[in-house]
Image 1 (cartoon, protein in one colour):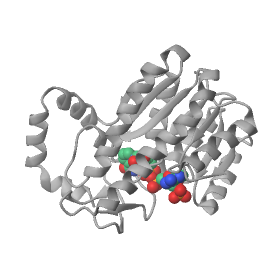
Image 2 (cartoon, rainbow, N blue to C red):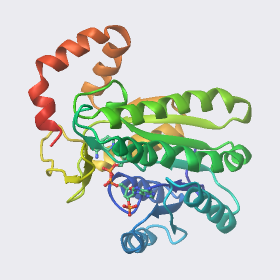
Image 3 (tube, helix red, strand yellow):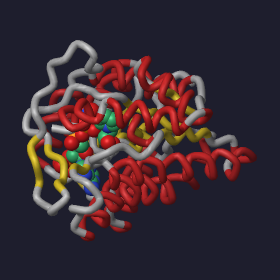
Length: 269
Ligand SMILES: NC(=O)c1ccc[n+]([C@@H]2O[C@H](COP(=O)([O-])OP(=O)(O)OC[C@H]3O[C@@H](n4cnc5c(N)ncnc54)[C@H](OP(=O)(O)O)[C@@H]3O)[C@@H](O)[C@H]2O)c1
């Protein structure tokens, strides 16, 4: 798939990984639709990216609601008359153990990561069928198995894999591609928040470790998923080993995690 003159929506693209994906697409000649809830940030991102591609537009919408997701897709179609790709990037991480968990947090995590991905997909599929387009879900290494302190986030990201697998088979005859990118620990924007077990937001510590991926690496992997119509792309060597072992010897992975539990606790901050 060449990206030149292709209309591609990236949800949650007014900052972070979504914005990096949008920039990479614009660089390759795509007509990108930016999205986010915060309109000030959205307009700032639009101004930046229009330097690269004047065709870029921005649609403010909360994609975790049916109305917001529908607005994003219908407004895109009204503007361009076609949709070639959808990148479901919106997501919110959680922190804390299941025993500490306020039940409302489960709802918030699923609304963001699952509803926020599947609602836009439902509305986009009829248009993607017309273009034999592509839908890519941005998941996480946390979507390979349940991890300590990240239970709701892991469960939500795992749910995305089930949707991708169903869509791949259901849409085969329409030649729509569905893929998933399992993203490792990546650099974050300043003051990025996750939701704590008690429902309060916690600000994550800046990430400086050399092993941290850049947003551009994730963006390039996302474009590869679309271009080569991949099923799963797993980032980082640790992610690839984890995926392999989890499928074959999950109890070994459990033992390794228990042995390194302090690293998980530090890493979740
Ligand atoms: N960073 C990592 O280490 C990492 C690792 C693995 C996977 N991931 C995944 O990568 C994706 C992006 O992560 P990130 O670190 O770039 O996150 P981020 O910096 O928090 O950015 C999230 C983006 O989504 C938008 N957004 C959030 N909820 C929305 C909603 N309901 N409707 C529309 N837009 C919404 C935000 O803008 P508004 O707030 O203005 O709406 C923002 O543009 C997520 O799915 C995350 O789970 C990240």
